[in-house]
Image 1 (cartoon, rainbow, N blue to C red):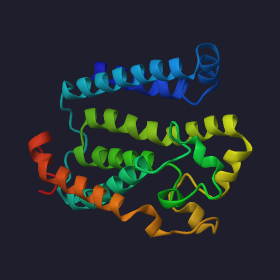
Image 2: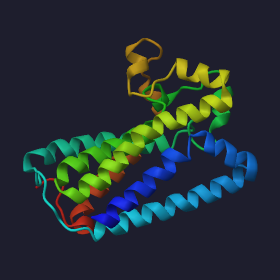
Image 3: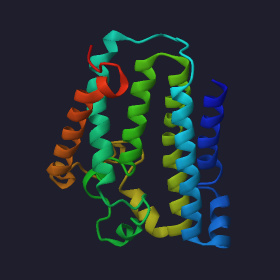
Length: 226
């Protein structure tokens, strides 16, 4: 558990203490955007591999244990997580690397961005909390808890970074979008348009979801339904 805890602290630390902070701005100013991205991406990949390795070798220490009644709920929530993540990663987004050009469009918040400006991170966050609850052991609490913390904090970090860099253009984008899903729609600052999301994206998410449900037992040794 010590190695898993250290890996989690490292992975969270490089994101919270560098990415999205003024340290990032200083590093970019000194070394350039390309060098910074290569360096930070390398650290992130290293941290992720360390986290996975440490989790796979962590001892099983039961907390609340696996909850059989939660599995059908988890299956439904994971479908939502897949839709958010897949539509998010396949939609040009000003919050993503090289997606800044969308800020200058007449209507930058389209498709899934009408629901939330951070669809991919919310999908990962939902995946993390589902697995945190479903596994019910200390190692899962550290792994998925750290990923959940990272996704929630990541949305704020990205917003702060984009605000410093794009100022007024970013303010216009946030005026018609929300971090929390459906909040902008609920407040009347935007409206849901399912056709804009792209039915092919939803179909792709469903296909990947069904594939994961089918192979989950073979890949992870645990049935997602029984």
